[in-house]
Length: 97
Image (cartoon, rainbow, N blue to C red; front, side):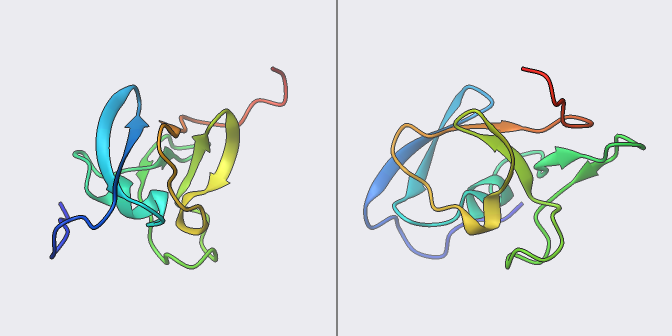
């Protein structure tokens, strides 16, 4: 599991799967997910194996999660905001509400 090397400058609260998690303002959601145990952001659509943020620059799509109700959000490119709701994405994305 990862951890921050220095203390948080401006702390905000993000909710990952309903659990309040401290985060630093403007860090990426993927960085927050990497500090959570177990480390994963989504499950693969076919094998359902857990996938975690990998490239951290928007290329690999392993960091997809539901952020504030929007599915398949690239968490490595999404900065956190106070009160943000992040749900780890399980399986295939549904096209129906």
